[in-house]
Length: 356
Image 1 (tube, rainbow, N blue to C red):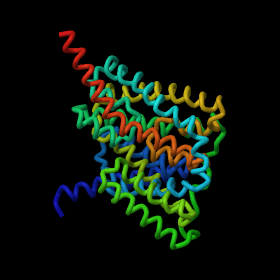
Image 2: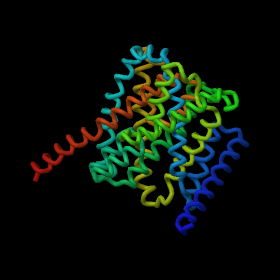
Image 3: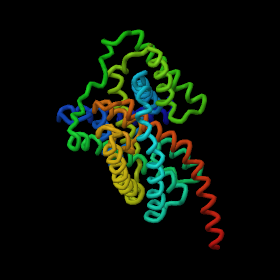
Image 4: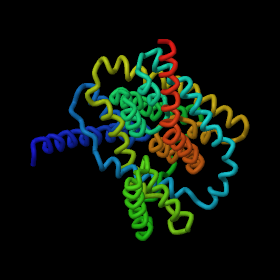
């Protein structure tokens, strides 16, 4: 075994040990979502004090397929029949993204002095990996984008359960799924096949977020065909939570004081701005009867798709309703952000040339 591989394994072993300690502590104290918050808190604190942690790599990516299958299994004929009723609130998503861009890009440019590409993709409420890739291709600061989006996800994931509990009276103890022993073996096998085929097939065709969207599409087709009737087992969803918690925490490995003062601080302030915008849009959809309060809140909370899936499950929300909105947000950002970035970039260059 090469020294580098041996070092990676040691770092991952340390990361796993800390993550399990976090789970044990949260379980012992009776704190909510121990399999998500335990690993996240333990790894975050360890990263901030400089311990050499390492993410789980492809295992973490594989864990996200579980959530794709869970969402896909919720796509039933009844849900499809409800889509026209969601049209009005879904139509607000592009406007929501435009407002976020109008607030976020000037914020990152003028307040924190980031370059244009970094400011644009830092403001976009898309997936962390997608926005970092787009930002890198546009010449942005990859490290800053990683920390800003990691901070957005961290704060949303931390605050959303508090808001759900104290603001909406949710208990966050909704059953996440039946135990594996209670599910038919044939359906378990189909879920595994849907996860693998959707994930790898999605990667082959260049589907963004393939680890979630690929399994979601395949499982949804099976669900609509009446072949799959259950969500993934509770053990699989808890494992996905565990891996997501680790992933959020290790995102801060190697963070410097300068990055804390600029990148992380910018992420924190921007999340507060996002929270205000999300609250405003939530009020609109609830006021006009387009959504129930919990579904409206979760649909417009600008967290990661995987994290919002977990919260929707444990809160007992209408998973289909919430995910339709988040899928719309992700697709609008993924398809629209690069095009809009090029248009606005050209305009800015012309403006600068005219000034010169």
